[in-house]
Length: 495
Figure 1 (tube, one colour):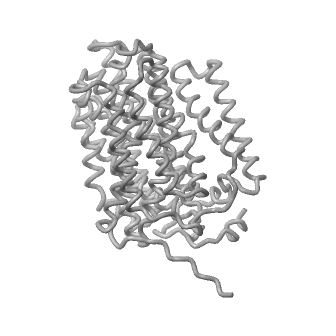
Figure 2 (tube, rainbow, N blue to C red):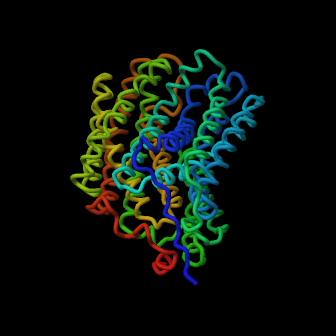
Figure 3 (tube, rainbow, N blue to C red):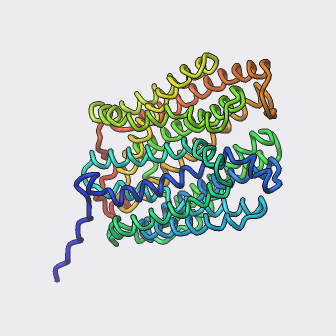
């Protein structure tokens, strides 16, 4: 009896032909990224309305990052087993429905629960949107352009969050910042349902869900990210911080031991040991340290030291957005002519030089800061786009969701490190409590001195991490370690 060959996956010949699913996936990615920073400028208003203290307000934003970052690997693993489009549709539906519940919130505790649930839903969306956009196209150049579009949209959402939030607060109540997620999620759901092809059984893995790995990964990532926040808030030698760091370390060790022994690991460690996967993930940590550190530092710089309004501070980030939109030809030429490794090394050099330039620019006016922002964004675009494509392309076809989840987890860890570095250095070099209102000249001068040291430390850290990761990539636009047509038997043989 002859076997019936598997049907070829449906792909699109151009970005224009795929506009419906591409727009839907971009919407899904935008809403989950903008939610990271959207409420930042609304925290004082929320505090007044709900009678919240400082610690409670920190949980309003922090709990989203904790649930989001902690569940990324779990969501990617589930998508590779249950179906990528199916998991994304569930995530979008939950995200939209939970956003509606903010209308009934009357206490800070209730808002924290809503934000935690949004983080869970966003975790079911983030790795899958990138994985699906990668699978819409068979041509490598189209994949690169589609991934570029996704990253531009995601970074724009992250950067524009404070601007959109500050502008909206001038006209509507803060609840609308979350309520608006519902219609966006609905539009994305319809677009994914109509435009993204259904999952094929042969593109998924038949491995059982790794429940032990799920629990340990959530514990490791969650405790690790929370320990960085706790270090800034309570001190690095406080009991809470030390306990969280110890718990995260133990969870990592237990996770590695479990993944080596279980027959159906959530994260195949043999894949992580390949140069491309390891290097791309490490370079992504470096880019996110730079982006989150600069974003957090500039929020303090513009709104506190310069005394700008939230709207003006948000507008000050427009050089980053403009560079994201205009840098596509530069990024594509770099990768096309130099290959992944050299292009990423160039991007890492841009990141390092721009952070060093930021250290000089913060005390020389906004034009100097804006110039550093342009160079930084060009480096971010180059490294983030190239590494995202290289990492997913290095994974077997039935592991692409866990590949993008690893990419997103690396970025989330990097973001936590970047904020922790800036927060710790500002507390050590400037002040542990930021006074409200207009700052005096002495405090502003101290803040500028602290910023210079902070950005030089970031330049050194990002330069080492991003360059180390980039040096492990290949010199080609195609990745050889794990071809896309690898079978389950071939992947199993790697283990």
